Every structure is written in structure tokens, then in C-alpha cells.
Length: 470
Ligand SMILES: Cc1cc2nc3c(=O)[nH]c(=O)nc-3n(C[C@H](O)[C@H](O)[C@H](O)COP(=O)(O)OP(=O)(O)OC[C@H]3O[C@@H](n4cnc5c(N)ncnc54)[C@H](O)[C@@H]3O)c2cc1C
Image 1: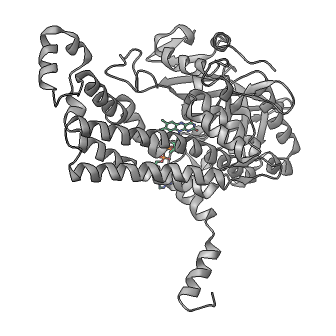
Image 2: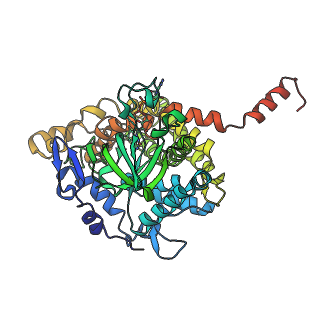
């Protein structure tokens, strides 16, 4: 077992992977300007001796040696709490490696159908953990016409499928879209996007392969250009991560890397397994973001002399409600954890789905309070360059004055963060991420309908209605 250094991580990405971005085929992503910010974020998670987060990043693996905590299988409430804390201080490019938690959580169920798949899951998990690799969550198919099943599409490749079965493995063809950090990781961990029926057996496929496997091609996209200054773009300049449009052009996968190849009854098990961990990640981020919103709202209000205004206080109370509901939901979900047969614990499924739903369904209205409090400067504040130019800067300093004690640059930074987080590069991305990442609202509604204790609710309602005894 060997932990990598940030440099070893970067070196490991020079492996011949086929990467495109802005019309260019990029041979070495580690030297390309577009990749600098996202790579520096993932590389920082390899700083195991960092004085603040080093201990949070490492754990002692069950079979000896140390590994990144993203691989720690939580077995107690404390493990889960430490994992959540680690997630708060880890880049999304590393967090997607949580896909192995999803696989490990369904290993027993998979073993009941085919023990070889379960052994493959376990071996790949150990291989990635022991070599300090990162893996992407590769689930979402292009899906073509949403009304038709996978095998009914005009083009049979609109869902990833097995096109050939050989003695030594399978050959797959298709694409997976929106894959966070696909170009920044080592392994593509592929799962079906949803349940499959028997007639769609070739689409019930799951496996993990290295990013540089022949036939894999990744086309990147991000909200952030290569260089942004951090005064004007305090969020986007530091927190971008490309999503990948990942093509599997007749890719060979050896049997020892296959987790599912045709047993349709397992497709939804695997597809569902990831939802919980993805949504937990979404809620952790939502808690962080919603606390920031409260702080920004209070600051912008005070800086403009509106702190005793009842309308401003009402808006801030709305933001506090949002932040507290999310914080409490996450806390509840972790305290009331569930566990698998082998003792792996995970957050309460209903609570996490309800929290992710609440976050996504109310995100856009909640941001409105911040925009309302901030006013037009949220969008029209001049840039740092104009502040630093003495000719224009003098006017900016004069006319952005509100009252004694309010520093102009501090006020500008607060505005820039509001704009960038909610109304510009990062903000535009986040508007869609809140809704879609981890599955759209209907995905959480389905899980809530499935996991709510309906028998109890019906019993209570019947008793209250006088139909049955209480
Ligand atoms: C920034 C970002 C990062 C992401 N990262 C990842 C990742 O790392 N890995 C990954 O696998 N995926 C990732 N996703 C994909 C995400 O999970 C999907 O975008 C989401 O599940 C919605 O699927 P879709 O985009 O195909 O849209 P659609 O399936 O078209 O869904 C859009 C809307 O249409 C509804 N809809 C769908 N089908 C029907 C139907 N038959 N009838 C009626 N309504 C329907 C949906 O419920 C939804 O409300 C990411 C997405 C984003 C935006």
C-alpha cells in the first residue's frame, strides 16, 4: 500500500489517455492551462502531511497500511462523521472516488447473483485503495428518446452496451455524459443508469477500467476559462472541475474487471447504490453553501446600512431556515444510519433523499433572497483592474462608499463572491448542478416514496379518521 505525493499523482496522468478540450487533442493534461486549477485541487488532496487536513485525509486500513479516507468503509457513527468532515475539505475530483463505497455497499447482493462479480468489486476496491488511485462515477447514458427503452432507440448505442462476449472479457460501445472529473482520475467506474429488463440484458453492464484503455475518449467542458483572477472570481478561480463526455468506442474489458454483464435484475441495484453517496455529497456541499449565503446576506445588509430593516431581517431568516434545515437533515441522516449485512454503515436513505430534494427544490428561490438583498451591484460591480487604475479607481472608491468602517475592497469582495457563487460562471453551473447532479428531482421523489414508512402513516391516518383502533 503506497500513498502518492501530489507530484506522483500528476505524473501518473501522463499515460496516453485520449483527451479533448476546446477543439484540441491534449496529450499531456498536466501542462495544459485549462487543467491547471482542477488538477491543483485534486493534487492538494494528496497532501497527506498537511498540518490542517493531513490526518483527516488518511486512515489505517483494516489490512494494514494507510490509505486516503475516501476508501474507508464506515463501520461506526464516528467513522461516518469523520467521513462527512473529510468531504467538507476535499475536492470534487477526489470525492467522486466515493463510487467505491456504492460498489462495496451492494457487494453481498451482487454475490448472491454471481460471486465472481463480487470478488471483482472487492479486488478493484483494494487495487485502487492500495495504489492511491481516483475513480469517476460513470453512470449517465445519453438516453436518446426518453420514452423508449434502451433497446428500442434509433441507434442501439444510445445506452452503453455489450457488443461482444469473448472468452477473456466483453467489448462495450456507447457513451456516458456529464462525468465529473473523468479526465482527472485513473479509473472509470461504469454502472447502468437505471434498471434494465431481461430484453435489455446487453445494457445491464458494469465494470471499471483505466482511463487510458484503448477506445476511451473524453471530451471536456467546464464553466471556467483557464485563467480568472480571484478578486473578481473568488469562487470560479479556485473551484472548477471539468465534466467529461466519455466515449467507449468498442472498448475491451477483461472479465476480472466486470461487475455485471447481462444479469438484468442487478442493474437497478447498482444504479441505485450510487444515488445515496452522490446525494450525501450534494447535501454536504449544500450545507457549506447555505451557511455562506447567510454570512454573505448579513454582511451585504450591514455594509449597506439595512441591518435594522425588517424586510432584510425576514430575508435573512429565510436563508437561516434553509441552512438549518439542511444542516439538521444531514446530522439526522448520519445519526440514524443504516447498515449492510457486513456492517458497513451509511446515512439514512430517506433522510438523505429528503434533504437533497429540499436543497434542490428550494435552491433557486433561496438564492433570490441574496440577490434581492444585494441589489444591482451583484451584477454590475466594476472589475478589480478598474479599481487598481488610479483614474477610474478614485471614482469607484468614492461612489461605493456607504458608511464609516466599511472598507471598499471588502465590500467589493463580498459582492464578487455573491455574484460568482450565484450569478456568474460558478453560479450558473451551480444552478443546474443543484437540480441535476445526483439525479433530478424525480429520482429523489421515487426514493422517498419507496422508503417512507407508509404502513405506519396509513395506520395513524386510519386511527385518526376513526376507521381503526389507534
Ligand atoms: C454538473 C453535472 C455533473 C454531473 N456529474 C455526473 C457524474 O459524475 N456521473 C454521472 O453519471 N452523471 C453525472 N451527472 C448527470 C446527472 O445525474 C443527470 O444530468 C441527471 O440524472 C439527469 O439526467 P439527464 O441529464 O440525462 O436529463 P434527462 O434524463 O433528460 O432529465 C431531465 C428531466 O427530464 C425528466 N425525464 C427524464 N426522462 C423522462 C421521461 N421518460 N418522461 C418524463 N420526464 C422525464 C427527468 O426526471 C428530469 O427532470 C452530472 C450532471 C451535471 C449537470
